[in-house]
Length: 434
Image (tube, one colour):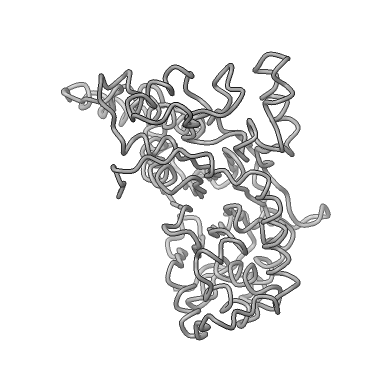
């Protein structure tokens, strides 16, 4: 992990405020309907060969082992550095399975990078079978001298369970990062690297498919998203979870009910948490979690000006933000449930869930139900990125225009896009060719 310890960024400008909704509309309009307006006469266009190279450069595809879940993943960035992350974890144990995760950072990449690196460890800690868990705990009891406010032994004791490992692990991960960064737990010293992680933030969506291949768990924190592609009379897709934002009535009610009634008018302002933050659940973002005295103590240690906005306005009864995941379980039905698409909001800004499902379904039919034989640059994940940038026809000129833009201009047209396409064990696909 590369973290600039000399900079601590906590400015409210991280949160795009009311401008974000407008930017989303502009992005979709420019990508879907107004391709001609992407003309950049003063910027040299990237040739198609270079476009193909860049799109396939982050492509990941796995379809070899018959006991594993087939998937493809890809990413195209716009921020410098990219604030999205994704990872795939295969746990080979009695309670094992495959965990797919996409992470979308905001206010910088630090929190997203840390969550992505540590997420797998926390999930695996909860998936160890009893016999192996006892051996690991025995070994960990002998380890001493840690300076952290928690130990690996305590982590295993807290997390051990079955599917609960993912939501419990995610909550504990956020709590441990937050606790480690608090000055009150580190004496008179500040760890600026840790502070930079917890002052930035991220959201995530994970899917856990056990080895039995008969069920699926989806966990969500914030406004990433997932869509299930299936063959039925309900339109061919299902949204396992809804984004945790101001449009989610249940989450808004949860938030308001956890604070005094007189705060209802300003807990959510301009469709944002305390008028600043878009997601209502997130990792990091301790400006919305720590007690006000703790935040003021940090400001004093950093020698910040008295008028520096170390916390949002109307910050009366924290915490206002949580990282507790929403967990959805559903059985997988053979020949009905075909694939699951996980994506950061850069994908959903450009394509609707129905459009995403249609693209992946068409890719499926193009390869006669065996997407493992697709060539480099044409996985389902790559095709989704091409469609997001180039429209239904995947117009090479429009894709090149997006790729050619400087980052300072491109972020007004799109966000980082990260996508994972998971082919479910219940899909009616042919056997992968070897």
